[in-house]
Length: 177
Image (tube, rainbow, N blue to C red; front, side, top):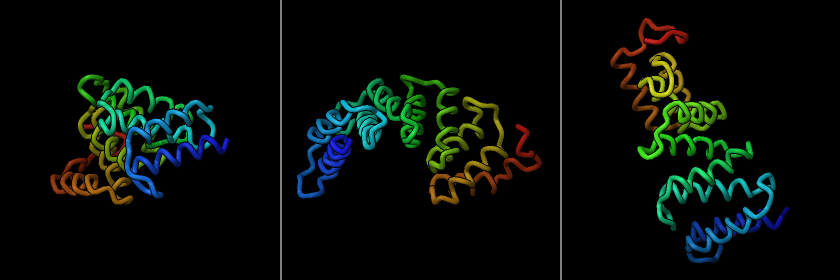
């Protein structure tokens, strides 16, 4: 069990260039993959899948590949311990090549309910735009407010703009526009 955690930590050291090693994304990927040979429920293994998914989604150290990002993020999501993987999986389904508004919304909402500020912002966006869910400024504003309370700058700006524009006025949280 400790072996997977150690490989995860080594992967992080190489990814960040800390702990006495030079940054080397290929070595980070190698250690993450070694850790992933363990059961996904072993401590650190789901985190490796999350890191690999992020690397594929952003093209860090590997060629950008949304399919590979989805594969790794799905493994991390299935562990039930990585709400950030859930949010990033939703981000994958907002990519033009994999656009699925309903799936993205469900994943954003799941991660938002787990407290991920970026997911709360994206859930607010889905509600205010009617993407994957019925349009509701009141619900959107409520999610932007939650993310703002956690310090998400995009949520703060968007919330301020919506309130200044008077969006959601006269709409109860259960109603949509």
